[in-house]
Image 1 (cartoon, rainbow, N blue to C red):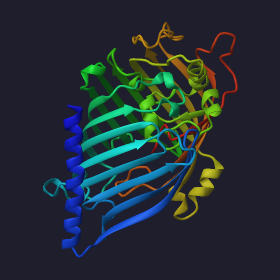
Image 2 (image 1 turned 120 degrees about the horizontal axis):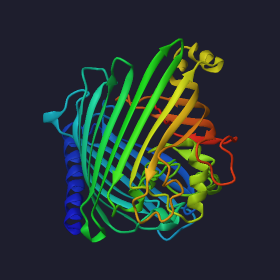
Image 3 (image 1 turned 45 degrees about the vertical axis):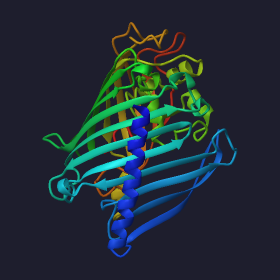
Image 4 (image 1 turned 135 degrees about the horizontal axis):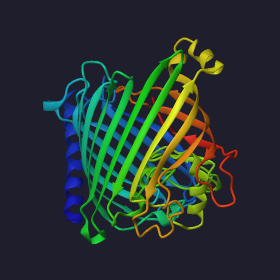
Length: 414
């Protein structure tokens, strides 16, 4: 099955480029390539030098036919595989596509940061008119992927190196209700490869913003997930972070060393995703650093923030244009939830007899956000959270203590 899938994938890529070349020639070569240098760092590749290339038809803005996103890099410390690449080719389906309502096929191939993936994905979006904040989106994909080099991972015990053939489907809905703006996402993942133990993972996210007037707002986020017992550890759930697999989707966390490993192991940094129990980042990081697996087959959590006005954000909002792109939020935070360690991969669960873990504190978030043409957040989100109270500290520690977290990515992105 793996061999047949690779052949089908390669044919799709070749046919896609051939079609692009043919159509570009017919349309008087109005296909544009936009190259740009790229520089990155991690503790395995060292300084990674490369080039990124975007390709699209003239007069389109990431929504036209034959879209290309590619990159090629060289690790200057010359690890075992110093060359890495990323390739994505997207082709809209004209019969089910119009403005804001695109249906498309995408092919992705990559080898980077010790991981390889080949994927085919179908995506369909429904949007009323020009209102990009209200939409329904459906995606289904088939992929083959494998961890090829454990050296890139900050917590290697959270990974498995078997080939996986994954069927994934997710539905996202965003819009407004009587309370305010909301976001709902549900996802199912099925590993078809029985030689590496078949498994199923279910996830759901719900986010709601409630405007309270006079610059006050309440933001609520609910997360729930369940995975079968044979699930690979990188797809199991953690208390404070997203699934280990999610780390590959962000440049800062894709490989160890981009964020100093000591910062991750000490619990100073939290990467957005999954449960996000902010008060337990330090405890979970130390648990992982000791070589344990923080891996739960079931997880539920509710995050909340009560936003209140501050003079810095008021001054920013008074600036024309800039006030719409930059924000400095301040809030009181409260999270509660728990994971259930039914998996044999977690022989030690320090919270197994606790129904709910909770934390409370204060925080701020600075963001520079320029939404893309579909209205989705795209920018920099940096949080400084102080969860000074937690319900279940480690033995010998106090419930009340000064705990600080630098968060990368927003718990609430709108």
